[in-house]
Amino acid sequence: MWRRSCIYMLFLCLFFVFGCATPPPKADLEAYNAYLETNDPLEPLNRSVFTFNQFVDRLLLQPAARTYRDVVPLWVRQRIGSALDNLRAPVIFVNDILQGELDRAMTTLARFSFNSTLGIAGLHDIADDMGLKQHDEDFGQTLAVWGSTPGPYIILPVLGPSNPRDAVGRAVDYLLDPFNAWAGNTGREDLAYARTGAALLHARAGLLDVTDDLERNAIDPYAATRSIYRQNRAHAISNGNVNGPDVLSAPSDFPSLDDRVDSNTLSGKP
Amino acid sequence: MKRSIFALIAVLMVSFTAVAHADGLEDGATAFIKALEREAVESLTDPAKERSERVKAFRQLFEEKFAVAAIGKWTLGRNWRRASEEEQKEFLHLFEDLMVAMYVDRFENYAGEKLNILKTTPVDENRATVHTEITRPDGTDGKPISVLWRVGRQGDIYKVLDVVIEGASMSITLQKEFASIIKNTGSVGGLLEELRKKTAELNPS
Image (cartoon, each protein chain N blue to C red):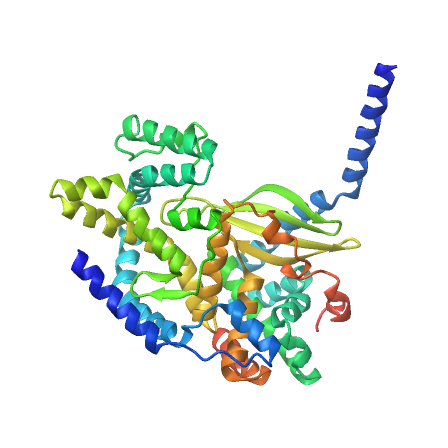
């Protein structure tokens, strides 16, 4: 496990050294600001990894995810999804606490208690019927709540879009997870791998609609994915608070109807 | 004395809420999205028509219900000013083609699934967010997807300004995508070239 991680990290470092883009000169202020805002100094490298990931995805992940979605009945997929969610509950609970969200921590704890027992090892999300809705948290979000900036955009091989903050978060979540620790301590690593594999497959299947849409409609899928990843993360960090200060305060956040007047939409064709 | 103050406050509060309701932005926006869903599904699932005719009907609806030019202009951002008048015109034209193709695709995909309107919240005096969720039975685990509709109003006319799916805004995503293409091709002309290719690919006719 450690050796494989080390080799993975070594490759990442090599990529970082060779994959940097040159920033535009500061004299061109607009271009320079756009460069900072895009926050993707590794873009040339990231694009290569993106292409590589797409290749792996089309060859392995996507066909598996499609088969899973088309062959396994919805009821079974729901049980798998609930069980995987339930296994994540301890990590979500710890992150709720670390973020100071005590109400949400209580919800997670209650959900875990009900679903692990009455819900038969989490296969049935009975807590949801009681009004205890599921929510997600991870250590990347916790770091964000603590004030950490995401750092530059990175595409990880196989794992996909990330950034230093979320990559660290992912590793910490893995180490925090009691199921993984238990499996590791009792020589049941296979179980931990099986769970990770199932989670990956289930998550990939859940993204099929989004990625199909992107594949058909995006002109620059790399840039679209980068933007969507960041927006999804911001949404998760704010716990889905769409009217939070970050989303709507800036008037430029989304087009105003007033723009319409001088572009003649009211009369139909532009 | 105390009681009359309370009564006064109560009267003031009632009249304030009355004013807020008389304005009707939320109700108007909610009704607008409801109608949009119904009409979009109707126009795209009419079995009496050929697909090309259905798309034509949808395009008409789309032009009427989406602030296409405003969104297009906004997605081009700072590059709008850099574009020549010719380029601006062609851009808006191609942008509409792209949006229609994209939304035909999306509405066809989601047609028949219930759009559940949760609530509507005001953004400012002429903009509101309609919160909805869509449950996809053939999605992975039947969990609803959050879809927000940013709606703008001008007089009695309502138009969609943006659609936000699970926190990801269509307009922001397109804006970033266009900026990236312009950066990589070096000009607005490069973006137009890519848009021509894409729209031709999406509307083979």
